[in-house]
Length: 110
Length: 115
Image (cartoon, rainbow over all chains, first blue to last red; front, side, top):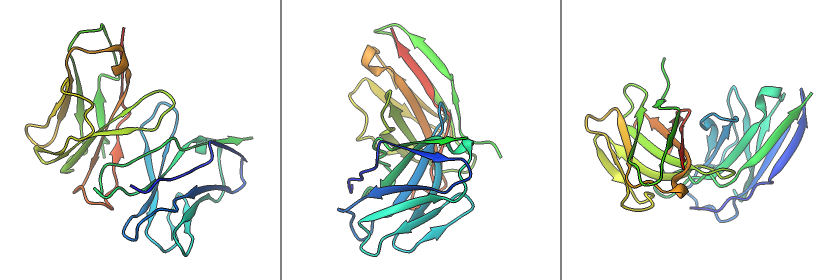
């Protein structure tokens, strides 16, 4: 698995964009970048994934640098319900054993 | 539709006892996963089922842990001779086919406390 590095915690004001960085400098060419989040006392929730192109869905956008060594998850208009731990995962070679790490604890404030 | 469900939501047991944790995956999902999450840590992979068979059990910490999925749907995680260090949230997830880009859908977890 490629190792990922994320800040331990971040704050964001409600209504503003939340930009969550992730470093995965050792990612291999066929490894995807996944983002999951975990709201307190719930199971993790899939957000988005990508290989090398930027991706957008109804929840977020994923920007992957051209060299694929880092990425940024963007929540365009953060709400209080987006307060959660966000995990950046560089897909394991197995394709199924997600390696979550410790993630970034995002606090969205009023 | 219904998501992944896990029972019980909380389980308190005494050291040395046997426990069973149940997971009901999303209907039609062939792949099922168990993870364990200790306080302040991210989930850690335990075992992966493809259908009825355990395709990868490399994450099980020792032989006290065992999981089954006899009919390819419901799965049970079994822990023998529980230890205080087994206290954690046990998460189950399922996905449609188990491939590398297949989204895993997680249940709410079972919080196990070993006294």
